[in-house]
Image (tube, rainbow, N blue to C red):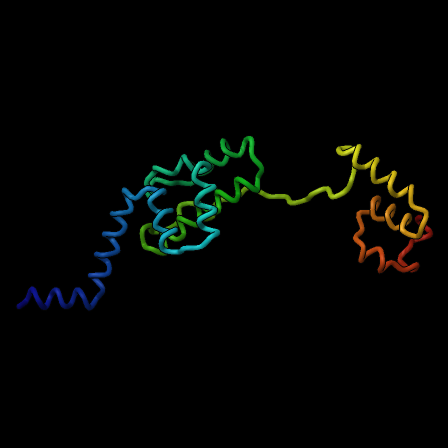
Amino acid sequence: KEEVQRLKGGYASNLDADIEKRFRLDKALTLTFEQLAIKINETYPSPTLKTRFKYSRSALRTFWQMPISKISKSIAMKWMTTYGQDRKAATVKMHFDYLSGCLNKAVEMELLETNPLQGMKKPKVINQRTRHLGESCNREYQRFIDAIDAREDHMRPFCYLALYTGMRKGEILGLQWSFINWKDN
């Protein structure tokens, strides 16, 4: 009778929930990152996740067979350094985000206490692109100049303005004389 009372009290104070959480955390000691990724794909079906899973499979092979409880900042930093040597920062960041996102889901699923990669700096991505014809594509540049020079209508100055300033059609059409700084040319 006393044992039943003790157990009832334990359930009332969430002892059962703590035992179950401890069981899940113990199970995570052997759960590999691959198993976690598969479980996340099954639990949260989305085309984006399936694509990330597919592309990250080879990129994250360092972590694939590793138990999620063994993943650490130092291992992730070493991976970013070696994997990122001959890849763009955006690619490394995309795979790092997938890895970290999966570990966040593991925390939600109570398979980890905290995400071991939380607070880690991601590679800085600079998305500046040169969007003009230049020396890198001389043939195309020359063809464009020849096409402009062949015209003898009002479009010729617009084409040159677009080519040398990078302005879009709407910006060119919206120009006003008051925008020109005659003093400083």
